[in-house]
Image 1 (spheres, helix red, strand yellow):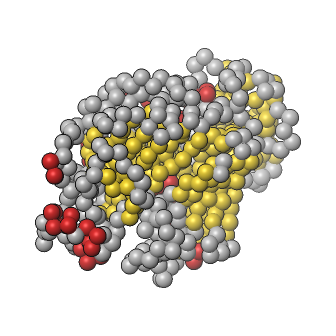
Image 2 (image 1 turned 60 degrees about the vertical axis):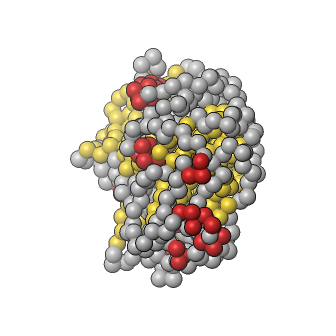
Image 3 (image 1 turned 90 degrees about the vertical axis):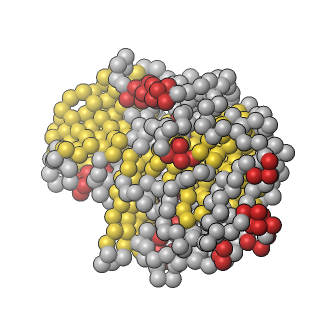
Length: 551
């Protein structure tokens, strides 16, 4: 049945948090109580380019200023107790504040943050320490009405974005239009529906203030969100400009060409070579200063076991240890299984018995760069290498590219976390590749071999802690990657498999923090994940590669 909305408002405190009202199904009306309604087509929105966005790909290694933070819907109470949810795992419908006249929704909790008089809806991000930029936004929704099925789509939900002026939003539009690619500039390839979540990399920058609100929410739905900020960054091009769908596509293609194109650069290596069994080849020994821009390898094998025996090393200047020393299988996402994908900094293509691998991150060095490929297999290979770069360095202070491997199995203690990276010094974190295997746990509320994806992510940047809402949302997905494999410019679900006989599932995931969502740190950076919803029994094995620049 349907309940009268005015009655629900009067009974707000009684209804909030009660599972008994999950089947009521009433939507908030933005026009209620005589409040003014703004158009929902988003035609007013004039986002600007923001710092280091659609500008210079070669600037990625520059260690600029800025403090990364994230506003998310994570469960604020690690000991929370709700029916059907593990303790501390109610990572939805948690807001900074409920502003103006907003209907209560199921299991709603707010932080009691302050609201400006003009704000209407549920406050999900708030910052008064600009200048800054929002480089990534994520929204996911699912019903918790047992009578409604498993709907994970948006309907009339609206997002309002306020920049500097808190009286008038610069954007007011429906999330369903984002998903349907009908709300420029929130259109592909920067805004996409990605296997269960709506993810946007459209940059939204501000000089002094930022507010992001949701409105017109369903009473019986669960809303997850992640709004990432880089505040305190040097302002650049803050004059707003209108971006149509074609403008987004052209800007993106120009940026993609900067990352991938070889024109105007020096080809240091472009030749076939033989890789002997139990031997190795020095592919590059270059004097600096310079920057490697592309490493492209083609191998006459598509066997993942062969790739595990082929070790790539990269060493910079006078460093005593290689900054990268990894098997190709781990470096290119084939630790669990070999599969093709295409992201901006990395591609894998498998064609019959041939594998094509590309890494196109800028890799500066001051005096010396050495790249070698070691074959630990008992058979030889025929291969081709293309290495492209230039004799220029990024302006300002820059870091050396590193890729580090971590793994953990059979030692998952309650309250522990899997650590992807724990870095010290000055640097910039730019990417995470993770391989996880887990099992069903009959004691959890949802029996699934992918329960480990409930594990919340956490990063600590120069002492500032940001908590996430789950492993799949970190990698741009949702609902245990409900739509299966994908690859996007900045993320990929490389593989997802399960075995009914053993009730074990595994995933290979990749996400890049490039464009404006690279994470600078002055002193320290740490990224770690819960073992499932803090249930180590769901974990079998974790492994990962972290990509970062470090000085």
